Amino acid sequence: QVQLVETGGGLVQPGGSLRLSCAASGSILSFNYMGWYRQAPGKQRELVADIISGGTTNYADSVKGRFTISRDNAKNTVYLQMSSLKPEDTAVYYCNAEKWFRGLPPYVYWGQGTQVTVSS
Image 1 (cartoon, rainbow, N blue to C red):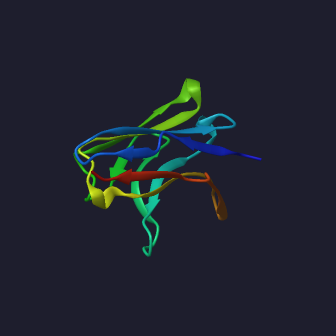
Image 2 (tube, rainbow, N blue to C red):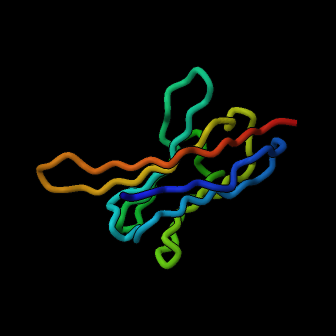
C-alpha cells in the first residue's frame, strides 16, 4: 500500500516562505503524476501545482511565480517551495500521486494533509 506523508506546514507571516515535502513509501518513479492540492475552509479542493513523469510542471494561476514544484527521485520526495505567501494561501495542503493504466481507471493516492496558515 502506497503511503504519502506531507510535512513542512505551519504558521508564517505574509510575504514569508515555506517548503512542503511529500515523502512516498515507494519509488516515485512508479507514479505518472504527482501534485499538490489545497483546501481552504468552506471551499473545494483545488490544484496548486503538478508534475508529470517527464518533468513537465503546471501551476494554478494564483501561485504562478511564487510556488515551485520539484521532485527528488533518489529521496522519493516531491516538494512545494512556497514564497511570497499571502493570507489567501491559507489551507490544508495535500499531496497526490497517480498511476495511469491504458484503458483502466488510475490508481490515486492522497496524503493526510498539512496545514499552512499565513497570518500576521
